Length: 313
Image 1 (spheres, rainbow, N blue to C red):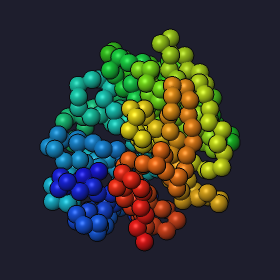
Image 2: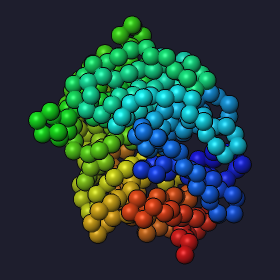
Image 3: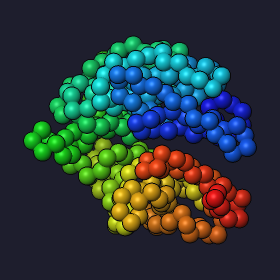
Image 4: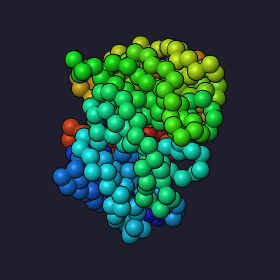
């Protein structure tokens, strides 16, 4: 992401020492820490311009940080929660970014309506027992972002159900539509894998599992990738081979396949194939990728010249 609009890509860093690397334009980066204080450290890597000033801001676990346009950020809205889970969305289709936030393993989700300047007002409290994780996306194509909520078992503290809450134009804002057993993964992404104009839920487990929201609002397993050689820790959508199909880029940790970038390419509708980054896809990887290795707290930049993918020394 270009944080200062200088034409050079900068890097956002999640984890226990959150912050950002500013690219000086010649491949050198300067790290700037974002202090969580007594609140949970960490930031999301969502790309959002909360106050619509043309500069990307940062959504942190502590609160919202606005870009000051001089390579720094200012905390303007504080959540005041511990062990925070936070996601952005637009639940009312007003083109202003809203937020849902809660404290993990609590029973209450706060829906915050954006004012357009980086500040928010509380619109609604949603009560669900044993909350653990949340995701957002327009699952039924009504231009209102919905919620995908993960619950844990109070006895085992293991993942239990996934709850779909559809956004509505009523005072309730969100209405529960369906529950289904959740796959055993940490986070998921919401995207249209097969270009059928219906969003899938992609779970980064030892295998990648796809769920599709049909027009009748029924969630069902659609297809599976049973490549179990890597332990997926994070996943995000990315058109790797520039064929117009959404691919998945995952990062791995643990075991002999730890600290890798893996690419799952969407070849045809309903068909997913697996490829490792070390192998050129059709001989021509297209985009540069950045990986942050949590084990070594350093970064590796893979530069691309459209003919081969070079890793710096």
